[in-house]
Image 1 (tube, rainbow, N blue to C red):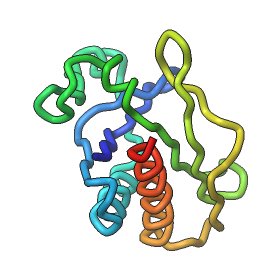
Image 2 (cartoon, rainbow, N blue to C red):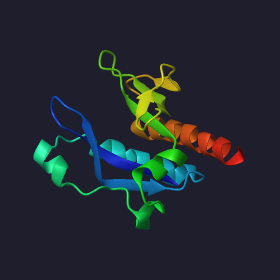
Image 3 (cartoon, rainbow, N blue to C red):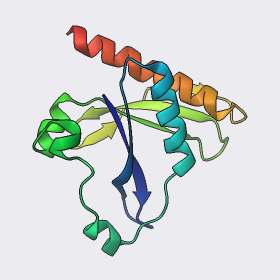
Image 4 (cartoon, one colour):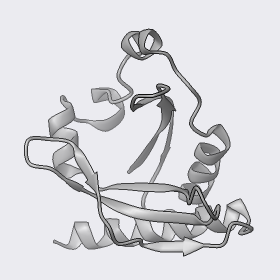
Length: 140
């Protein structure tokens, strides 16, 4: 399953992952593309420190089947899909798990698409990347 929480920006600070969360099977490119499109439409709204502190975790046992964030991280693959601040080009990159928890972006981009690429095409390309990675992970 693919979980795409809303990344809300605390100005001058960090992103907090909150509801709503888009969920789709990694094997269903159409459903996954639609989930990515919905996440793009929501964007990265601002949130205050107080709102972030009061927000419940989006990651629940009922939704993900795991009891802790560390258990979720152990089985997760993570990516970032965004735009280049200078050119507006869409970019997707993987994140790697850090020892002790957390994630760091890889230097290598998985793809770059021109700024004028229609959102459905961006979402479809991202869905293909995620689906292919999930297939590889399930085979290992």
